[in-house]
Length: 286
Image (cartoon, rainbow, N blue to C red):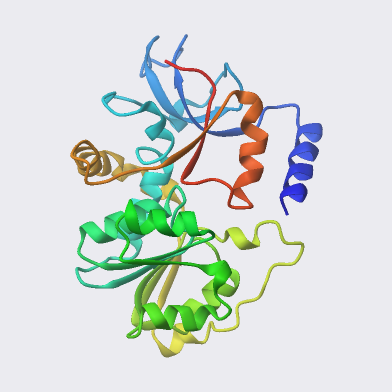
């Protein structure tokens, strides 16, 4: 799969003379927008390049709090953080004491969903693809339990082991066989926030889901969402999370690659699970 992704990136590069775009942190050198001044630090959509001309500027957020690592604005204080917050709190409407399952739980979003759920008093289990990641979920992020999905012959049986009475909330990052297994283990009136389906992105033919009838029999609400629809809540989110970060009650793990030349390899690594935590490419230092 990694080689297929690499070839696809090269193909896009040949077809498109423009640099790949993604979320980044930058310093304003010149601005024609009165909302931004020279020297301001911003986060938002930037190019995979050392210098970018960014229009429209509606995709940029000014950074006010600089007492945290600036790279956090590509993660916990940026799009992934807002994704975790919106998907868990707004889409899933969680309650204290509920049971929560997070797939791809050690990633940029999953690690935060688990911590937000624990802060609310939920029982939280995560899945990941290596022993190192499973240990991280329990020892650093505070998950109650975690398992390596690659070591489970029967995903449904594994979920039944950790959720004998069923799952109230599933934060979906994987799709495919994992989603199928979750559906039969959901409680009545459970909620599923569909954030992503990384297992399906690079398949020539996507896998079908066979247990969708459970949505009817268990009265499950399954909802896809995009973080862009929730950016109006960003100030509220910062007000909640920044004090938690500074108090050490929420932690965030990054996997940092150095130099713009390392970006393609870092991207390909996402699809084979090589990264631990949020993948960041450090282009230059402030």
